[in-house]
View (cartoon, rainbow, N blue to C red):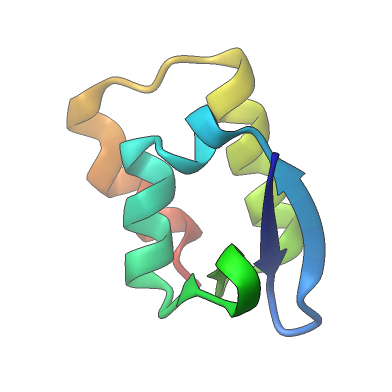
Length: 77
């Protein structure tokens, strides 16, 4: 599991490596000004509730590649 810190409060999540490597997740990190944190962590600069919805989508649905940009725009706060 990979530690991810989300939002201004830096809420901590432990995320499966396959989700961290997903193109949508990586694009979100890039667009929200996130990136690598301390000791191999990842920082995502969006609201926690939106991040949790994104996780649900990645775990329960398979977004089509053509919709990735639209989804990232929505989640990038």
